[in-house]
Length: 495
Ligand code: HAM
Image (cartoon, rainbow, N blue to C red; front, top):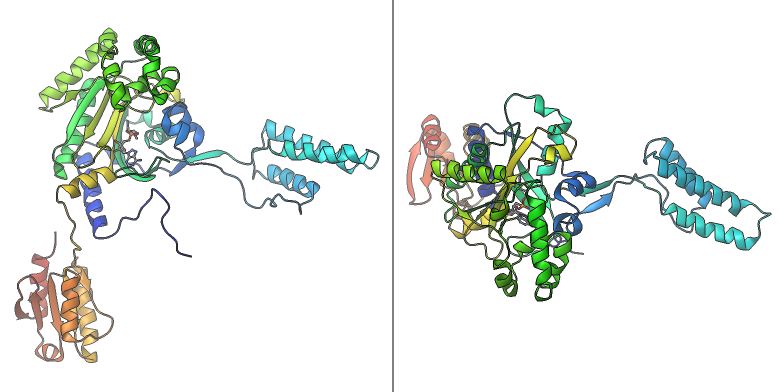
């Protein structure tokens, strides 16, 4: 049997992983200058956290989460060989010992199971009824909750807000600024730039103020990071989707306009008219575009406060010389947004060209049980897509091997090993063959590994107290004593 990575997930191998590390480190460095600290979050959380914050009607929650019941081990496997009384007893024990939730509904299920067991074992009851009781026992068993529903995180904003509330971070001075780097999971149809395990670099700002200067600064930080990693051709799109005062009326208006053109829309959009009409604006179907173009724009339906917030955001972007394009259809696929939404596209990505998405989510902390006064804004960059775009533009990682130590003659090995260790102590990367190799083979391997230098340790070199160092790019070579060699290699090591 041959194992392969499952559909939609992949390995990131060296040397590409070195480029990933560089990009992730650049994010840490840039975000640090804006006062963000790293938060490390769990990979899985209660399903309910995502359902509540992202919204049950969104594609992410309705179709794409990897969800499982966190059931305990140790229960006997249910099958024809396990007598129902043993299984019932095992469940009761598991509940008493806290392995499965000791909750009202589970206690009722257990009572029911015992009731049916009583009938099954009662010899005075006719056989027919005792068999029926077994059927009822099995059916009742189906209602037991063995464990909490958990999901692999499809995104991290919900987790950040959960952590913010759990740790009472609203008592910290100023705004709480957090960033995260890591894998997310969505069961989407895999294609270029779309994976089932993908990576995000994200940042969230939580605090008492919703001033648009914060929105603009978050966007500025994002663009500073893109500039640091030399992403070219990125385009920023912005929108405001209003708040709970003005959006409901707009959504109603949109719905009634959509109902008028119901017949002309595809099945997905038809369904969304009722479940999530804003999302119709996201449709990419060519035949729906002329219809969507005629729909009312939210900008014309914002309340005064939202209109002023959006206008100030644009002023704040302008004073930072940030170029943007307004896109009235930018509604985003997650329910927690209000007011500012934004996305950044990058070249070289085909149809999955959004390299980053974000926005304001002022009501989310309250929705999840935190202080109502806390506002929030943030974004997440799709690292896979960022890397694709950078690689298309020519970014390449090198293997980063500095030195290949070629030793000849068994007596030289201790000196070669000692030299390798001293070089490594100076942060120089070294490859040291474990077994002696022929001179030609040794230098050819050094070349193929991409080493920048070969250091030759032979018996002559040992006797003379010098090493031969060869720069592989141009075959320039010379002899150096150990101290000089260390100095020379330190100066020319890879950055
Ligand atoms: P999102 O738009 O769902 O937002 O995802 C952000 C970015 O993650 C996307 O623009 C895309 O680059 C990348 N991405 C999403 N799904 C996939 C996938 N299947 N494969 C590869 N890349 C993908 C959020 O996740 C929000 N939590 C962003 C946010 C933070 N809003 C406020 N704070």
